[in-house]
Structures are given as C-alpha cells and as structure tokens.
Length: 408
Image 1 (cartoon, rainbow, N blue to C red):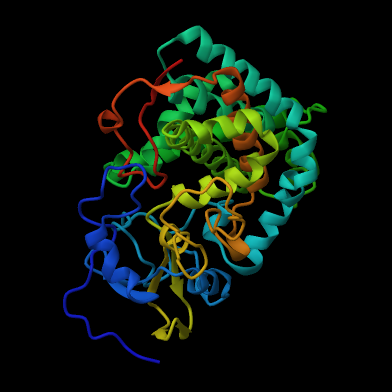
Image 2: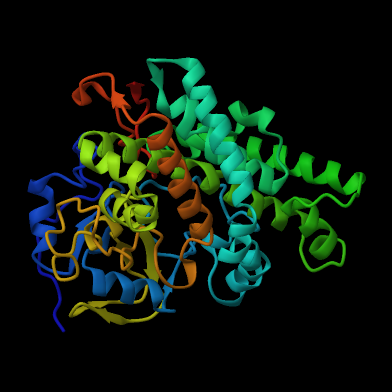
C-alpha cells in the first residue's frame, strides 16, 4: 500500500478535451493516467480526488459498499461547487442514494426493465423505429440524423413507457440538455431542474386526479405504490425525472456516434444489413469503444479502502473512469481498435455494481433494432460533410454530436 507524493497533479476533466468523437482523452493527458490504476488528480474546484482507470479496479470501486453516490457527503468530488441553498438531494433520484434507500426505490422499477419485459415491448420499438425511418426519408437527402432519427426514437419510447406526452419533447429535451451541460451557469441548471420537476409533478397530479387503468409506468406506480402509501409523490417525481433524462439522452448520443463510426467503414455498415444476428455483439463493441459517459462516475469513500495498491481514505473522492477501463489492454486485445466481431460483453459502459444502469436492456434493444433497420432502409447512408466539421458535446456529461448531416 502506497501514498502519492505528486506535487503537480493531472487535471480532471482535461482542460482542453479533444474534439474527435473517437478519442476518449488526449494522449498527453492519457499517458500518466495509464501508468497506474489509481492516480490522484485535481478537480476544477481545486479539490483532489482519486481517478481509477483500469477495468479490475473500476469494478472493485463500483461494487464496494464503502463508496457513496451521495453528492452531499463531505469530500464528494464535485466538478463545481454546489449552490449554498442546496441542502438535500432530490427525492426519488436513487442514482444519488446508497444502501437500503437506493434499493427500496430501485426494486420498484427492476421488473419494468427486465429483459423479458423489454422483449414484450419490442413491437413498440419496431413501430417507433419505422416511424423515425419514414421521417428521416421525408426530411432528405440530406437530413440531420440526430434531430430526425437518433433523438426522436428513444424520446418517443421513454415517453410511451412513462406516460409522458411526446408533444412536450421540445420542453424536456432542452431542459435535459441544460442539466447535463457541465459549463452551463448553475442558476440556469437549477431553473431547468425545477421546471422539469414542476412539469412532472403536474403530470402526476393530473393522473392521480383522473385515475384509470392506463398501463404506463407512472399510472401503475401511482396505483400500486403511491396510493397505498409505499411511495411519496415527490419520490415518484424524482424517479420520473431520472428515467426521462437517462431514457433518451444516452441512447440518442450513442446512435449518432455509432452511425458516424460505422459508415466510415462500409464493410461494418454492411454487417448490420447482411448479418442482423450479429447486431447484439456489435452493439456491445460500440458501447465499449464509444463510452459516452467520459467524465466518469463519481463517489466518495465512507471508510478507508485500498484500491489498486492505493489507500483511499474516508472522506476522499474517487472517480471511476469507464472510458479508459473499456480500453484496458489487460482485458481487451487491441483496445483502441474497433472490432465488430469482438466479444465485448465485459465492457463497463453501463457502470457496475448496485448502481449499474437499470435501463440497459431497453437501451440495447433500441440500439440493435435502430441500427439494423437503418442499415436495411439506407444501405448507402453516408455522412454528408467532412467529419472535421462536426461539432461535439464536449461539455456534456453524456458525450455526443450536435448534428450529423447524412445523405444516401
């Protein structure tokens, strides 16, 4: 067990992130991080934290009960200070809860996102993909794949599942993007969050005032959990907020980046059309290679724990860097190469442990169906501009493209 003696610490996130969609971080920033599994880094606030970059150690950190997700705990590694008026986290946001408090809410949703239930709604996914393909065809060529296909598809699916009117998509998409923007003024972020909470609370109140036998998730949770007193209305609102944002932003960004990557190599695009049975494995490799949550998952130690030969003391922050763990040469051969035939099921794109993404079966299904059907409908699809002209969301918690002009 050793302690760091660094005097000049790497900064995290990197001050000047590389704009290439396929570069996780600049090589100059990456090398000192790759030399050891756990490195002390300096955050924009001036505080320090431990950056964990290797596959084994990231799994160890994320499954260890001594690492808390509660951002209000002293020592939590924040990228910017919390406003002084923030004294408690949003109810129902179980992603920021630990232990039984987290499990209580998560268990209420587990069955909804089990593989067998996702298979049950695959006809909905198929129909939504078909509609999005028709919209893309009507818009071009050329057309923006992000705004006409990648973003509407998961937004419509999560709206249907939750019981949120898709007609309000401009409202919740714009607010969601603000919440994920690491450089947006904190007052704007707070205002956007409150607008979304108020919107969802009004929707929940309306459903409670007119009870029916609707089969959407919010209606079922109201009948089965809220009315019997097992779940508070504010807790349901917090759960809905989390699912609404995560349910469309991540998949939308994955779709845009995946199409950009696959269409650069025509043989890989053809695989989807000619061998749709290979799509599940291809999706796993896309998730590994692209790793769109690039700033990492943030935790704070509640007791002393040794990770990768470093002692992380109680009250010290730790960041699990999924992107570099997914490029660990000890786990993946030629990790910086994209291999559509790779068995990449060990990737950590959805996290690991008790906080692993609950919606991953849905995300996998959406990506698989969308990419296969897109390749079938548009076998000659290609990017309509020089890739260097594309702008990326470098300051977002979820990395992606602002737009992807395509033609066919």
